Length: 74
Image 1 (cartoon, rainbow, N blue to C red):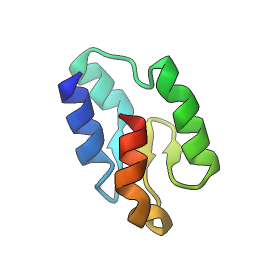
Image 2: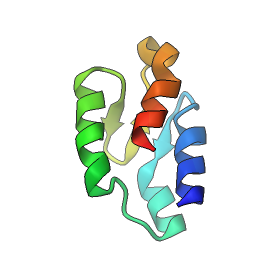
Image 3: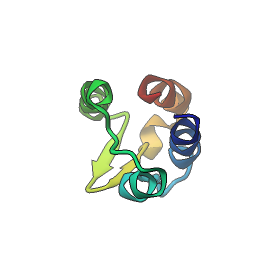
Image 4: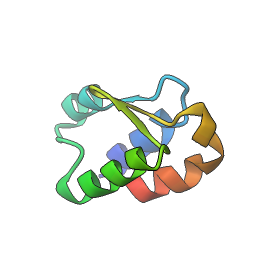
């Protein structure tokens, strides 16, 4: 769980975002977990997160909200 949180925190701070499939394979988990799925959908609807296949990223227009976005996903 700690490793997953660290990967999400660090990956979403990169312009290219986080490759969720790679993290899932590496850590043996299947994100997003059901409680995160609703949060993920809300953040996408608000324009605070972009989901493109297996990659999650924070759009440049929402970088100022990155800490809050990441906190909501953790």
